[in-house]
Length: 200
Image (cartoon, rainbow, N blue to C red; front, side):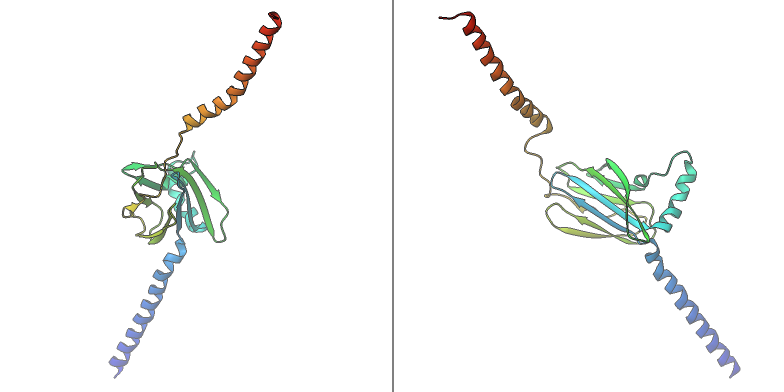
């Protein structure tokens, strides 16, 4: 009887410990609070917002700060956008305001108008998190990323439009619009001068 009672108490203790541990594991995802949104425009430009728990993010960046103490750790170095087999680096990175307890970074850049496929990697999270891709054509794709892992290929095709006129063409057209009135004025002034010098 005492042996059975002892076993029941041990079993109950194990169940309580298991419940506590499973609760802690369940809260691990909440602790990182990873939120990633990648928004594309028709011209291939993108805005990438990455948010995490501020305390967690600061702690995760410490090893990179220790490795290069003379340089502040670049958050963008932890993020990889691999488009059609080539890495696309953001043109700008800035820390933006975020509701507590989050810290957020915003990256801007551009992918080619011919881009077809994206693979995503974020080297800081350990737990799974959703990556939300807002396509330029209005479709929203949500991909579950398994923590410190690459995404599956994400389809980018069919949403971008190459500009009808390139930057060089637009520059030439603007110069022509500016120069045409000057040329007309020059010709008119020259004719008047010629008429004054050679009266009939």
